Image (cartoon, rainbow over all chains, first blue to last red; front, side, top):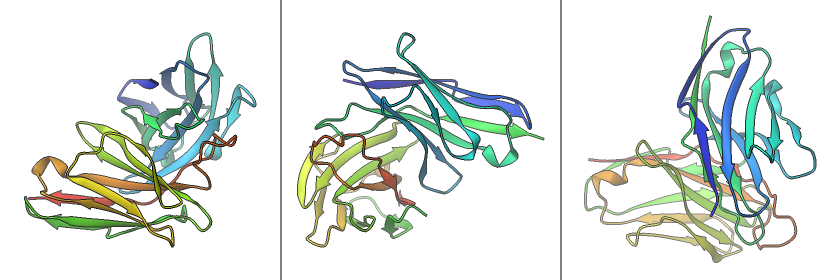
Length: 114
Length: 118
């Protein structure tokens, strides 16, 4: 069974500072990994996904994530935080094949301070 | 806008009642997934349908059921509602879901239905 652990339920950064949201996964087979963002009172929007094509994945809104197999990690980063980045971020894993369900982490709430 | 629509947006009902949540997938998507988001359980997969057939089941209670119709829209039925069923229910869709080679199909999420059980 696969699982995802997001370290830190709440991360606070200043505007312009580096954003780092941590995600570690557990999977018995090569995983497919995703980051979704949820703005207040909205649904989930895909930020980026890792599908084994490249270990560094670039997503929307200036976010990127690096797949590190040796560390079983898929941390999300953005060089410079904007106020509009304030939201909840979810890391998710699926193992593909006949198992399409997404297993989500508990989420990390990002606060951006002016 | 993901292209996935869900109705209603909000639903308030009483314990013991039954409700139906509706989801229309993106045009051309054959697979529909239902997820529940609650404060204590987080985001949990409930069930998946592909082209009208149940494909995968997650942590779905026996009081809950779903179906996908020939026009590919889906309904999630929740019965004998309890206070603990209060949550956000999301529907997602993807082009495939048959277990074929394109196992990286992205799931696109709707805006959700917020269910409050009083």
